[in-house]
Each structure stands twice: as C-alpha cells, then as structure tokens.
Amino acid sequence: MSNLLKLVIPVLVTCVVAAAGLSVTYAVTAPKIAEQDRLAEERSLQAVLPDATFTCLEDSRIVTEMDDAAAPVDVLDAFYAADDSGHLGWALKVSSRGYGGPMVVVIGMDTSGSVTGVSILSHNETAGLGTKVMSEEWFLQQFADLGAGFADDDVSSLDVISGSTKSSNGVRNGVAAAGRVYSEVLSGLDMSGSEGGSQ
Amino acid sequence: MSEWLRVFRRGIGIENPLTVLMIGLCATLAVSTQFQNALFMGFAVIFVLAMSNVLVSLFRRVIPSQVRIPIFIVVIASFVTIVDLVMKAFVPSIYSVLGIWIPLIVVNCMILGRAEAFAYHNKVGFAIADGLGMGIGFSTVIVLLAFVREILGTGKIVWFDSTLISLPAGFAPPSLFLLFPGAFLVFAFMIVGARWLNERLDARKEGPACRV
Image 1: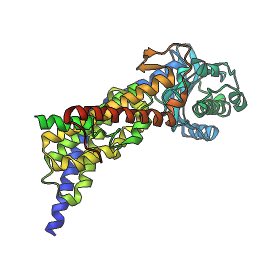
Image 2: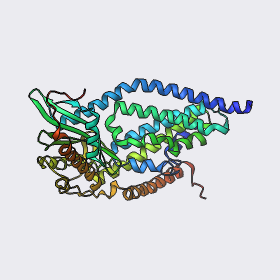
Image 3: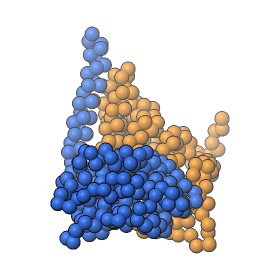
Image 4: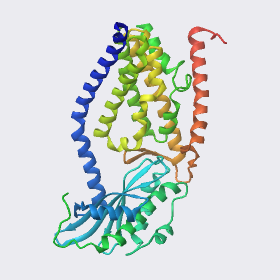
C-alpha cells in the first residue's frame, strides 16, 4: 500500500501544482482573450458593413431556420445591422470547410440581399497558398458583384484561385449559404419595431 | 563552465534535434511555410523546452521512475497551455495561423525526449543548457527552413502586415515550396549543409573525427 502511495502522491502533487499554475495564467489572460475575440469580430463586421451597429438575432425559431437553410455550412451568428437612418442589412458569421479545417467567414448583405462585403475572421489555411483568398483582393471583391437574390449557381460560376481551390471553395460555400439564408429566412423577417436580441 | 557550453552547443550543432536527431519533424514541416510563424514557434519551443527541463531536473530525485512519463507530460502540457493562452491574448494574428501546432507541442517528441534522456539524469544547470541549446538549434533550423520556403514559394518575406524582402516581379514563385514536397527538398539540403558544417567544425577542434 505504501508503495502505491509513493507513486500516487507525486503524480497528484504535480497535477495540483500544474492546475494552480494554469488557473492563475487563465485568470490573467482570459479578459485579454475575450477582448481580442471581440475586437476581431468587430473589425470583420465593420469591414463588411461600415458604420453600422449590429444586433445579434437570438430568436431560436429563426436560428433553427437559418441552420436548415445554410446546411452543410454552420451559421455561428446572424446580425441585424442598422444605423441612425434605419435598417442597413444583415451580417452572417458562418463556419465553412476550407483546406485545413473550418474557416469562419463574415458576410455582409444589404436589405435587398446583395453582398456588401466578405471578410475572413479565422482560418487554418496554408500560409502563402490558401491565404491567397485574403491577399488577392479581387477574390473577396468579386462577391460584391453578385447582385440581389443570387443563387448557388451564381456563386459557383465565380472564379477560384488556382492552387487554392479548396480554400476558395470554403469561402464560396460560405457565401452561397448566406445567399440561401437570406432568400429563405432573412428576406421574410419583419424587424420593424423590434431590435432582435441584445448585442 | 566549459562543460556547460559544451552541452549548450551540442543542441545547436552535433546533436541538433532536427538535422541530426530528426525528432519533432511533423510540426516543423507544417509550420515552416512562413518566416514569421516559424520564429514564434521557435520562441514557444525554447520556452517550453527550457522550463520543462528545469522542472524535471529540479525534482528528478523525487519523481519515481515508474510514473515519470505522466509527470513529464503534465509538466510539459502546463507550460504549453501557458504559451497557448499568452499567445492568444497578445499575438492573436500569429495564434490564428499557428493554431493547432501550439497545443501539439505537448506531444512533440523533442520535448519529452529531452526531459527523459537528459533532464531526468542531469543537474539543473546542464538541463538549462540542454533546453536552451536544443531549443535554439530547433529554432535556427525551422526559421531558416521557413525563410527559404517562404521566399521561394511566395516571392517575398512578410512580417505582420509589411513586406520585408521581395524578389523581382519577374520571378514566378513555384508553390511547390509551400507544400510538403518542397519542405522535404529544402530540409534535405539543410541536413547536408548541417553535416558538412558539423564535420568541418569537429575536424578543426578535435582532429579527425572518429567514423563509425
């Protein structure tokens, strides 16, 4: 028995000390990390719909409908965008499959459903190759030419970057899903008088 | 002191973890597509390696050998998590690219290998020397590898949002260098270079090196 304790106690002590050290580090860095995440999301939203204030849609019925419309892409958050003059449009934060894993793409749309901007919030693509979807400016800009009420076929006729096909497709699938969400869910929503949920 | 230096230099030269021992290669090949990422990966590895070596060496007399591996892993995982959280908080742009490779330092055989093979049997001073030497040896190789791959594969070296060096516009960068075949190719040349360098340095210091 004492032999067993001689083995257990050192492991236990190590784990307790490690846990304590990690708790301290976590307590120090957690507010910083939350702040960085918020800033990154804010930057992406402002990039696709400048000068708007965003309100997250939290109604569970709407969220389910959006998930159904977007499948296989996941809708992480949907925002109602407005400024002083009224409703500006919508912003969708979706998670789509790229080459190296999920890519979180933010898509801004105006009230008529045409794309105002696309920005990539986080990704795991190959540096210098898959990341061309961000560095080659024409790629993200071409989505703005889609026009109101675009369908999946319109998106799949857009160009991809040669050598970065899977990363490009990740973004294209995200935008196509946003188009479906708009035409099936968002276009029918009446947001007048209500401000959705809370930010 | 000379013994300390000898241990320190071994990690950089004749026992370099990447070009000689060839441990911890998978993270190396994956992360070395960008100079900037490789540099931060190097810092992370130096920190984790030095700290885990120090702790393992300090407590080597009270760690029972039957349970040493779980204890090493807990120690290493703790330091990796610290690096992970700190990078997330202060350099999110780097973290978003290095992503999974930072947590994977836990299972990088280089760190566990040094704890097991060196720190567990040696004094703290030497354990620090070994950790720093191995860490710097790793970082030097991964940074050089990333430099070559990035400049040949993309035609320029990027540091955060600015371009440090760029090749003339007429150069069409072959993306082969960013993919795994390019990594193996460049790495093979680096092994040749490292062997040549090690042999020359050995020959100068100790006369003809003994061959096996």
